[in-house]
Image (tube, rainbow, N blue to C red; front, side, top):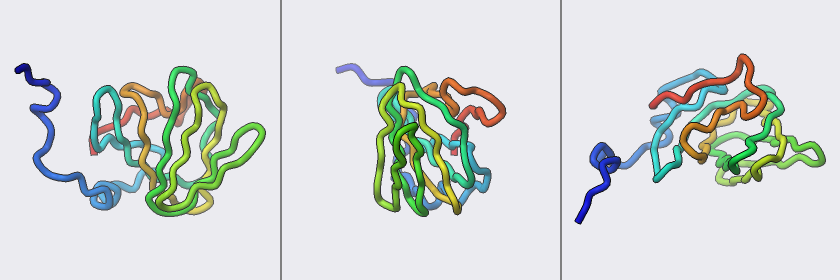
Length: 129
């Protein structure tokens, strides 16, 4: 039997999402809290309007932990509340908006840039939380 070397570094305890979110205040700066296969689970706090962008090669899953997130699409707007999720399909231009602070989890392939094709000053490399 072969072992997967990525599992050798996995913690032996559950990840407490609330604790991870309480450990930082910076907004629009995702923190990596877990990995699954080639995907990362990132925690983030959002407030205000982000940039319009798309991810050409991947879908992006937003899971709202607290607050209400609006995801603007060019022809619609989706409102996502606590305990709800929304998947932005690959290639779809979107702009997340949080009128008040929102805490979210993002599920996306490792290496996905938070600003997608837009780049710019809001681009952040995720750090481990």
